[in-house]
Length: 222
Ligand code: SAH
Ligand code: DHB
Ligand code: MG
Image (cartoon, rainbow, N blue to C red; front, side, top):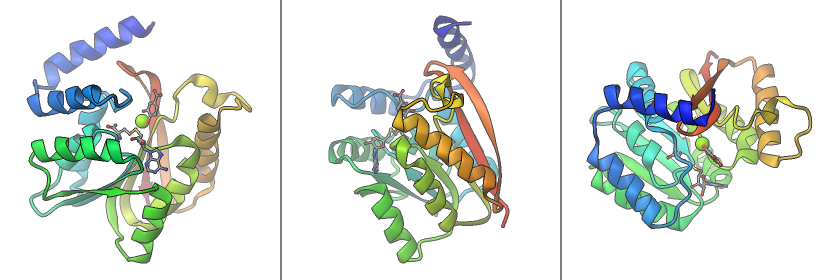
């Protein structure tokens, strides 16, 4: 198996199960045109997140790492009419591109971008008693993942779902001392999650257009 096959199969499945979507296409085109890195979730991963939020009946969603708003749109579309999604982004250029994409998607009333370092924004949300969220998607700077996971726990309660992207990005994640701060961040987060009595979770490897990677998903139990 190789990247060519993964991409081909991803395309094959998406062509059948993910209808053409001019709004999402435009979000990607505008992100590209603005020079944003093309590291958003794949269409299949985006729709997976969307379905998960709908199955869960999530009314309040927290996203950490907005980029151009691609995953934001997938998740925002899962919300009921009175639903709310807060998405945290440190880069003002990314946030501006995302805002335009969110507006075009007709989600401006449900989605709010909070500009600033996610650690600080999360601390403010905790201080201001913005909890609880039904679903949290963690997908920002990987070295900070342990802290984001711990803050996500402070912003959720029993029954909530926490999803973390890129837990198997480069198989080095399972090798000792890779030296890559991103990989080390994911490893440390997994150690913390393993010992955390308030959650039960799983890591799912994914292959596809974005290569070899994985999601971790947790249910907050207490
Ligand atoms: N969830 C997006 C992809 C996010 S990429 C999608 O799938 O469409 C990661 C994003 O996290 C980038 O936009 C980056 O600028 C942002 N980021 C990096 N460090 C951050 C920090 N400390 N606080 C908030 N956002 C950060
Ligand atoms: C990359 C992919 C991601 O999903 C992410 O959140 C950050 C970086 C990458 O492929 O480099
Ligand atoms: Mg990611």
